[in-house]
Image 1 (cartoon, rainbow, N blue to C red):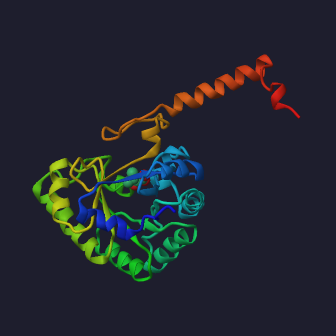
Image 2 (cartoon, rainbow, N blue to C red):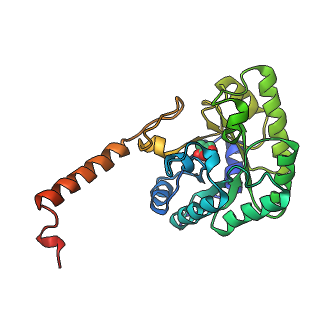
Image 3 (cartoon, protein in one colour):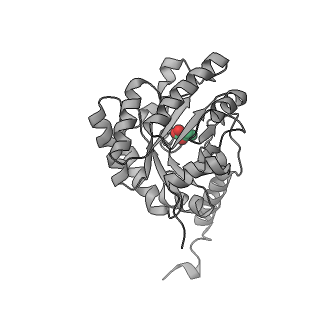
Length: 266
Ligand code: KIV
């Protein structure tokens, strides 16, 4: 029987120094294949706003939409830990509404949630979530929900002072009970420095080789999102081309009368 990945499995990776993998998914059967490939955490990232729904940025998606995709992904997964990225404004209004919205994702099948930032308010939210049994993944460095305030997609933690500030926030997250922390767009040496100061695993999203894990957006990995590819992402396939070729062949076959064939009719 497949052994389910739990938050304890993830925390233990840090002490055993074994790397683990995180990939996003947004639908049931993509999640199934990713799970069968051995990915340890499947994240329903709010990146789905851009790569699956075609919205301009991640702030355009709401908790109701994330809940639908969480339900779909959870149905396809047997082994991986399923984590839902809480979208913009779904945990910012009050601790009460944060617990309510995060709780909906757990009811939809997630095993935990991811929330961005390290302010005192966020720390209170995390303390409350973990106290009611909702595991939390933190997210520091470049936090996309602060895109407008940060003035664009900018590398964070470049200086020793900036890296120390991330360490300060990460330690508060750790104390509040997070089981891991995503570090996004942080220079490799700063991410190494931060990772060495923590007891929970760090997950690199463009933060180099010395974090405890790596995360990528699956549409970048599969070559399906055509708008842009971040420098830190690696494209392993060309699903965009595959979809185009299948659709084109089908179109040609319908129009030339090759589809359906005798075997494909009743
Ligand atoms: O939205 C997302 O997919 C993410 C990860 C890439 C960390 O936040």
